[in-house]
Image (cartoon, rainbow, N blue to C red; front, side, top):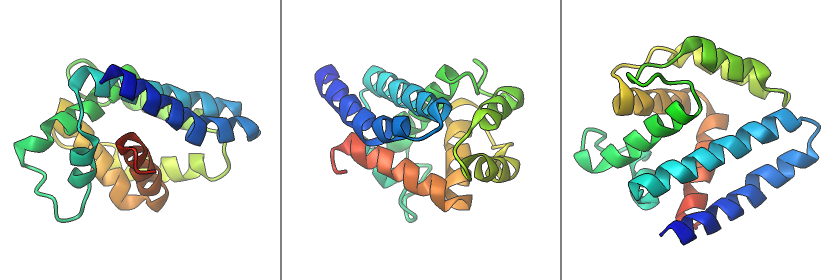
Length: 159
């Protein structure tokens, strides 16, 4: 399992990080690389089924179904590794804004700030808060939805 995760991470690096490195904004490429690394680590630690995670993001999914809990908790795991969620499961506004304000790719910072204001106070803590925030962001930003689903599909091996 860990070997296949590593293969997927290499593919993710090729798809997301390599093109970003050719862009002018190396800061954003480093952020993307860090996110991918953390997704891979959290997925490996929790033995994540990315088909199930993809299903969770479908409009008609019953989000309260316990089968989605590992996917929700992976979001929390990544958030904690990115230092935007405290150990008690609440989002850190200052750390989130620091990451957003460091974005350099034209259009990304503005979009992130816009969506941040809409989604900055998700209900719940830990797994539920992580899922609720991602769900809110994906609902309110086509750009974020497309990037998230591309990441999930890549992790499924379908991209």
